[in-house]
Image 1: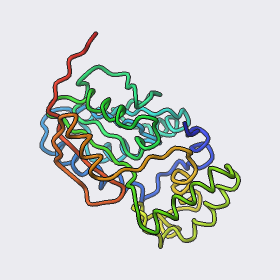
Image 2: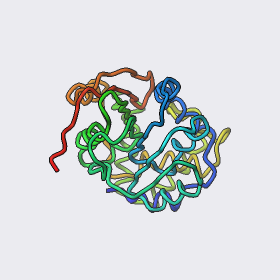
Image 3: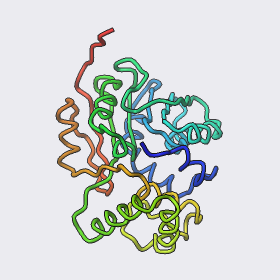
Image 4: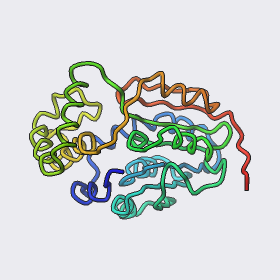
Length: 253
């Protein structure tokens, strides 16, 4: 497992980059639509919440939300807690074994996390398990690419895995000035983010030894196999899909 404590400690800044907030808003659009139509309070889970950017975005727009964020990084959770958001709870937990009962949440999602896990499918099943019938389940994962950029990305990752953290940081710093012209979904660059913020987004993509990438068809099958009807397939890379759960889970306790 990648050392996300080290990653957040070395690269995080307390202020959330504006571009990172824009990405979060785009992903959460189906959630906003659901919340705008809801009359009561909604319980929302962010599995792999990092520094709490999604909680931050939701708190700006909806006060009737009770937000729960889990992550394996204590450093990331401390950053999230420092945002001092009302109606938000953060705790350390493994996304592949969530510490919640069946059907605990109205909305559950995981952004950019499942690809770092040994069993992404198990983690997705956990998201579905803790989501209520007719609730929303959302994921964002890295897309498998067969073009020249995909080959370069794979080669860069192999070099980083062989030569370790010091060389990886040097490579990341070499990429930072060109981040704005690369075909990345984040659109982060030195024009809208700091050097440290740009380096962080690069490192999380080239430094981890394990990072699974997927095709749209694979992720769609996750939803199909867990009785989730796809309601939103965002036209973006990475892959971002939302589904509505049709399954009722019965606890074995």
